[in-house]
Image (cartoon, rainbow, N blue to C red; front, side, top):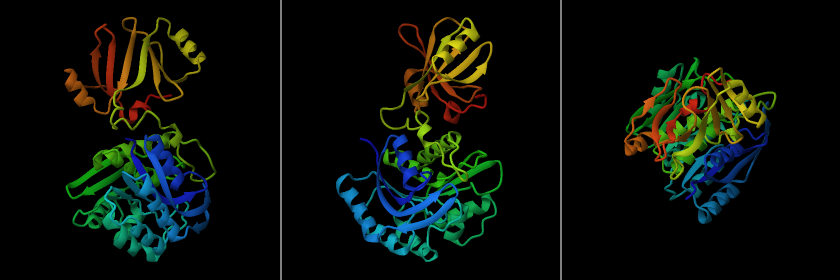
Length: 383
């Protein structure tokens, strides 16, 4: 069954964050997004110029309408605004047992306040105990704990304090800290886990927090463990940042619309998805010109042996001038290790960042099962 995610958040007229980013994320991850709008914001990439709160009773009514009919496998909570809205949401979620991802939205990317100061206590008292995980960035974590955070160690200590006895897990996001590496810490009752990645230098970061939280919620709705949900969500955000369309004059939106084949394989029935075909080439330049003429976008140029092209949906085709004539078919498999073990073949870590298992079908055709991670689409050698 399709994972159902109820999103409780504000609307962003610029489409980069809020409900709009949430819907795009859940949709691209193969889920079904339902919504309860808490506020209408007037904003673009330059900032928020006005906020019109939705009456709390309407917010609660939206939640109940969705849960009473469509239902939800997970819930994501974003912008709430004030105490009355927090109370309405908490009341409407009474008795709900599905995982709740709480993104404590306090300040917009441009600096505008999105949560009243007096509402922080209500958030902690009424919604934090209901959450499976809360996803604060460093400024939010500072407010929630009253703790100064200067570095990663401080961030981890604050996350541990917020998690308390482990009733709620905390994903502390380190994007606001200095350094070329962005590290996040997931603190649960079972311990803590560090996630890291290279910082992507871009101004198009509007909606990263909303996107990450919704991606986690969609993964939890599909039945993934929390740590796996976080890993997949971070991968989604990285890909969307790489695919930012370059819109607006300020903090631009990410490229949710371009994230298609990179994530989502963990859902039942989707692993083993056809991703790439490699064909032999006798004349490198002639083959390159041929596939360019077909309308494919060349993303790797390594003459005289190898070139790679991308089709509209994100699948790729490669040409290789060495080896025997014929084709090699690549299937992307999130469960690579278990699949390879079942087929009795080893998994090999390749120098280009992929992990692969090679198979041969009954007719002698070469097949590769692989897990490319973020290198599937953004290897260091991409054009």
